Image 1 (cartoon, rainbow over the protein chains, first blue to last red):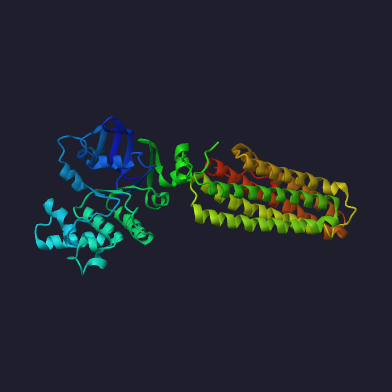
Image 2 (image 1 turned 180 degrees about the vertical axis):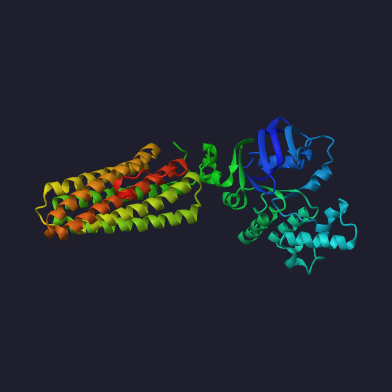
Length: 253
Length: 230
């Protein structure tokens, strides 16, 4: 079993009066893919947003309890959030490239984090990131074209390339394939398989089949609570909790 | 009682699959029992009917295969539904094999003389009754999702092995008395062996039911009787 990269203990999240997460205890293993599943509004996205402190941008949001990365308290108010987000990248539901060239989409992050000081270093980062995200061959001759000119699937791989350009340790993916066709989805899933050799990945997905295909561990959330977590194979063949079973078999009523 | 699927037609498809398997099971049970009766009573008139019922069983098998393929393609079943689907595939295979063995036993009636002595058939009859009871019990365990009952069937196969040994011995004793008995005695030996094999398929079904109910395979090896060990 791999080391624990992220550890949450009694994690609670409130949006104003509404509690969105209740005492979530969840460990994410290093260089493994953890899938988070559950009906809309169950708290899975809220959970991953705690990992890179995305909830900070919501004024009424309050987080209590503990969440750590390699023993470091993520919620520490003195923590440098910019450097946290350098270590924890994120990919969203809809591909959201910057309205800039393909090259600039990738080089922007390293630049603001003070990486790639020379042009050749930056070139190298762009090339490596695009290669790791399996996009290089398709775009190497058109790096100055706008990122938005790519297809949906390519844009999403561009966003993954952008996330890995700053050499993070963790990649959060919030329904990364929900706007993509099956081939583009398959390419992203293939990529996730490759990326997990280097990065710790958390993926929120509404597709059970995708969770089974890409993850080693699965957590099921319902109404802000982590109902069950375990090896993916066990969760989808023989879950312990009836609520998990009802959800994954399509009996949730 | 579990909740129903949000998609009603999915619920219906799964129920339809279970119904098909139960019907196939009950047909296999009657055929096994009829074939046994035919051997014990040397009833040559019933052979054709038994052979025909095997065709019905085979038709169920292909129907169930199609239902399973459709479920896998349309629903990508998970957890208990996945286990239900895969278990149906395995159970239907074992039932079909039991049907083949019953058919084979029915065919063995033809060369038997009408005046077989009781001491020759007594043990075979007991073996047949036990195997039929095992099949009834394992099908009950499937219908009621009863892990303990399935495990009981699994353990009881040891008795099937022992009775097979005893029944074989009676036939061989009889055979050794007079070489004229050789021809039909061989058929009786095969019929006995077929029942023992049917018993093995029943234990396979018992194992599948245990997996279906608990999601894990039975640990350890099945207790085995005399015939298997020697």
